[in-house]
Image 1 (cartoon, helix red, strand yellow):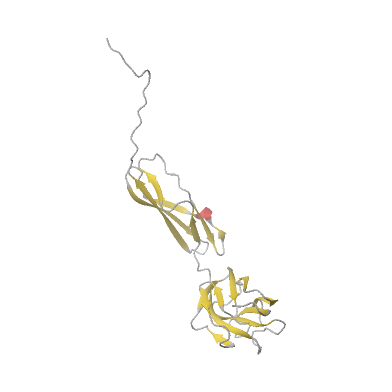
Image 2: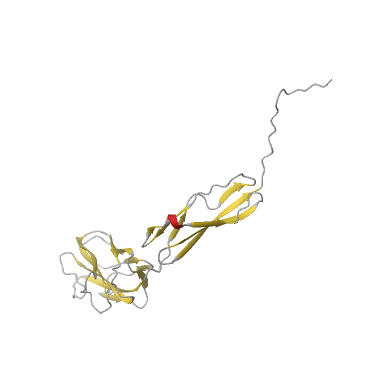
Length: 231
């Protein structure tokens, strides 16, 4: 009925079940949450033997309780699932700074609030740092990386890249590129993709392009007959 794994942002915390009814990880395990961004929290246990309740709360206004608007992030009631996930959006009114996230479990059918005493279950606290958008877009290079091209290829057709931001969404249209590619000379070159989101967070990714030596001999094609006569 406890918590064996919590994942959120950079939090990936495993813990033993049944050791303590309350564990405070807020001084050792934390992650950043960007205002207006959407995140997925995953909570896991090590058995599905009993039904259980799971809930999560975040103190958005840093006032020491979990009773304010949208501070109840999500819940799963009276379920036998091993893994539970819920998505939430950081509200625009959230106070910037370090605050507390609480995850609580209890036996199915019993109360599961952030502060109640429970006979069966567990509570874990974590630190989350609320901030303005501080996460750069994520660039995904399409096609091969590295890319192999033969020397003296007339034109290099790049496969491109996509970019996704945690707040702005698809920002592929904002990608800019540069390269030092020289198709006439064997060697290793780069093709750089650069993008910024609306908050100015910058990201780049590089595709390596290897120009190999030209090993294909020229092909001669005769015009006319294959024999010629002179008088």
